[in-house]
Image (tube, rainbow, N blue to C red; front, side, top):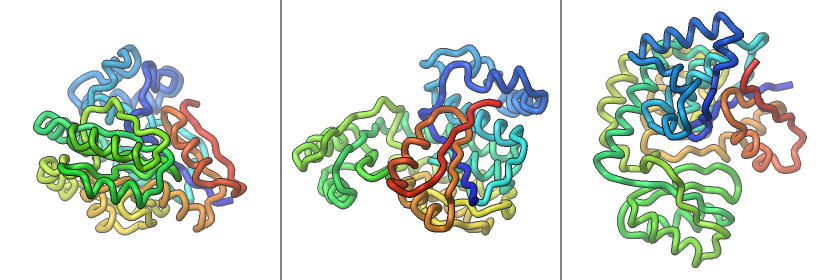
Length: 296
């Protein structure tokens, strides 16, 4: 059996996340306290006791999901992936869990990424929208025809693509998508236009941070968002991590490639169940095992 481990991105957070891990496992408690030191504030207090609104702040959301996922992976007995992938932010979790980066270095990168992305959101307000039941090619064509910035951001599964861009451009695109036959064109409650050119101002700071981070060959191939292809090469990993900032998440293509390469067991590590549902839809009739682990 070829085991694939997958790691969720922003949106998977929930109040009380990782508290059971903290309370029950010394290793988890030590790692989470180390994270509090690195971040300079007690993120665990927000994770355990904060409200939904508290957890929505980008500087909290991204590190919190990373911590829940990676600490859980490090506490799992028999964690031996044949391949890994992560959705957007989850790619950093996947890389840390697979040993390409240390826990501390990966957390620092996530913190910088979150901070710089928030700055972009403050500079140019943007948003995202989910387009349901419209071919990818049609979505791409409509986005390119709209005045202003709007691009496909997440290829989540067949029939579900998230677009990202300027407020007015998203509104115009949603109208055009519905006219073209989309079942739904649903604006999302998000802090900005992630995975779009509006994130470009974050490039310099993130590039500097990525360049100074030690990245080594992971224990297994990592299917990265930008290409949907497997790699163990540190230079390729480094390059794709930066490109991911303004490029779409090719999740549909990544999962298909993992299945084609032999994955017959998918385990989502971290908060939520979103990726399990997406994998089921992508896999279709193929016989694969799908499960999730959010605590132990």
